[in-house]
Length: 76
Image (cartoon, rainbow, N blue to C red; front, side, top):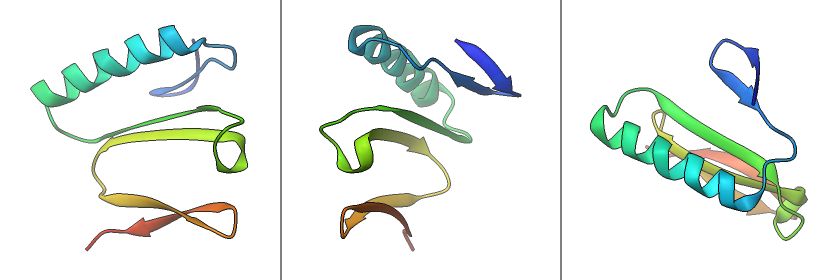
């Protein structure tokens, strides 16, 4: 993966198996030290806008679909 900014990594061609293993590792790290947040974004033509999204941690947000768009809703 390429680090395009501090702590921001991309890999436009990561296959689903590698992505799943990377996410499992991130979940393990996060459960051991739950600080900050983790966001994973990937191309998924079966999702709205062609993008799959997973999140862990703060700030609490909820992804909602509105008229075919993903919007972020703040959880109070």
